[in-house]
Image (cartoon, rainbow, N blue to C red; front, side, top):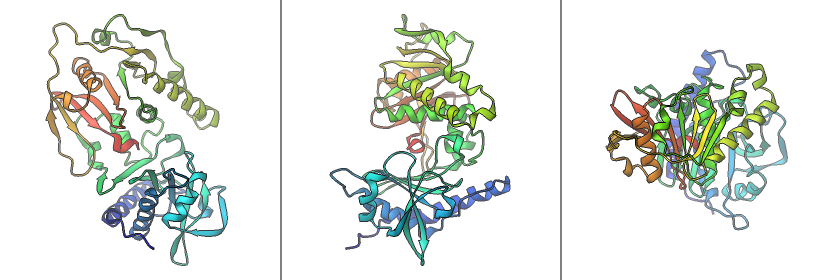
Length: 379
């Protein structure tokens, strides 16, 4: 029997089609070549519908984790092509899932005879290719491929059951919007692809991935005022600062396209992000030098406790809320908000064990700490 239609698939299809048309038009204006074909609303609805019902199935007792890319075989590098195409059905996707659940592998989907079919698998996609990732049962993310060196696909919409969170492109134009958030929003997929904010994006993704929760404090290089907000002694202070990640970021642009450099950057990012799993906060400079981890945040003598923050999420329909920082999360969130309240030139990135991710930054326009909920951009 055919599964009933997933209502959210039809709800988002037209908006996603418009979004990709905007991305592709902007890329063509910049003279970018080798771009993906624009997805149409019908294909978007069909792929999302099949992905949702597949996510609710189980293969050998495990839910499927798959990535579906709308791309023809001739645009997919050196793909694995099936001798016989497979139907784009939940049952077929669930059966294939164990073979393609590793990161970076996509099932290729394209029309043949007017209908969408699964033609094979690939690791290579053209820029701005439509991708649907099945994260867990009932949780899907529509994405697009950014340039290879970026390290993170751009998110367009997150669907979880009957909840739809469409990423709000206007969030990047808000006053005091941190560069990290602008890069995560990524509506110009080619802006600062190898810039500082992209390193923080990859650190955020890796922090969230280890699942233990953690806090990362980013302070200006060459300053010591941040130490006023750290309880002494620091159990895991680093002297001299650990600079491997900083050295990689400073490498020449020509080196950055080499596989060895990209692998070294990945390992370094995973190493720094792994430090955040230790209880306490990891402190790095804005040049990515590691100064300490396992640090306890304290309020400097004479400073007022933080009693309110602005909370927003860069999704369509979200309304800014002013609330006590304890309402944003637990002790880790409260400490991070206090740190940024006292060290206003710093950033604090906080991952929760449940997958939530919050970026704390001081907002001069609002005169308070601004908490940006960004897990919808990191999935």
